Each structure stands twice: as structure tokens, then as C-alpha cells.
Image: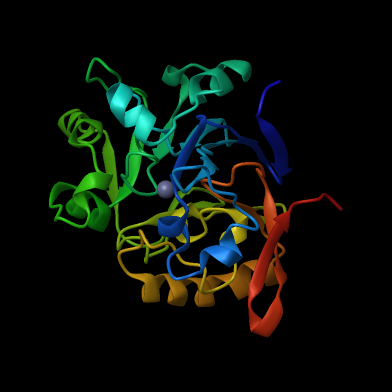
Length: 283
Ligand SMILES: [Zn+2]
């Protein structure tokens, strides 16, 4: 059965795709949250890893195909795949094919950031842009940081997924909030790293937000449930405090990059002024 899930937001058709499942250390995914709390919602395997999914998004609006995130790097070899327990039960390419699309049909790619679990399929195994007719939208800060890594950030970036896009002149480098198409913008969501961006779609009185790693899974919605991977966790907290109330008020559809089971969600008020995320239901 295909994973792809569909929603209509005003003029836009929205498809949640998947590029398969993987696993990361549960402690790293939940930062300072004790295991006795997180393991209730995210059971760990014998290596303390929890199940996650890669959830790219395809938007069709104004006659354009916009792909948010390209997928999980597939050229790391057996050891790399084993370390992350990669399970390619579906791929972004199969999801596109189900919609009658090939990589050549993509007009815009949004790289929320350039980590290998988000921008991993920017480039083919032949070293060529996977989406040759697309402009790849990235924040200037993120492109800079990806090209100037340090000991704490280096493992997240694969130069081979970045340099060929630069060489081909396909990056559309933006700074701050930027409108891609009428009703569709990228929005800086700093914290996980400095240059992370989300995508916000407003059409027909409705709002949908691709939140990137500001909220990796639904279970991470409480304000202090911040990943140990985040370079600037207090900035993550500030970004959440700024936007979660607004997205809640707007009744926005929330799309997370790594929830293992849920494609579309919304925020609800939780305890002590915070929020929880629950699966989206229409009406
Ligand atoms: Zn991620």
C-alpha cells in the first residue's frame, strides 16, 4: 500500500511522500528529556534507537511542482545504512511516480537544511542534480554553514550532495522569509541549526506548515522536548514560542519531517501553556 497522503489546501494539492524509515539514538532525539518519559511514546530497540521516517512533501500549485526535501542519502554503503537501520520500504521516486511525475517534472526543490537525512537525494549516484529542471531553494546561512563545517556539525553534511548543485548553478540562495509562489513562502526556523527554513502555504483561508526539524515528530511538541542534535537549543525554544501559538490560532496543518506514522497534524493546547501535536482530522 502506498504511503502517500493527500490534502487540498485552497488552490494547492499537497502530497505527503516518504523516503523510507531509519533509526536514531532515542536519547539524542530527546535531548534532556529522561528516557522513562520518551520511551512511552517512542520505544527503543536493543541499540537504544527509535523508529523515524523521512517525510518529503510535494506541493502542486499555480501549475508548478514543488518538492520540499529530497530524501535520505543512499550512497553511504552497507555500514552507513546499518548504523541508521535504513528501511527503504518506499522511496520519494516511487511516490512521485505514483503521481505520474518524474524528477524532471520538479520545478522547485526546497532544502529546509542540507543535512543528509533531508537533502540526501539532491544529487544522483552519478554526481548529477537529481532534479535537473529545478531551482534548489536554500538559506544563505545554511549554505555557508554546510560549506564551513566544524567538529559538531560535520557528520550531518555530505559534500557530494551539495557541491554538484553549486557547480550546476541550481541553488536559489535566499535570506529570511521569501515568497516562492503566490501563497507559498519559506520561513527561517533557527535552532536545529542557524539557517534552517520551513515552508508555509496559505491558500483559500487555510494554512499548512512544513516545520522541518523545529518539530521532528509529533511527540516532540512540548516546548522542552528539544533534540540533543540541535546546535542552538534555546533558539529552538524561542522559535517554538514565537510560532506555535500562531500556528495553533490559525488552525494550521503541521507537517513534520520524521514522524514515523503521521503525515498531517495540528497543534492543541497542552499543559502549562504549551502545546501537543495530534493527527490532523478534517472538519
Ligand atoms: Zn532531520
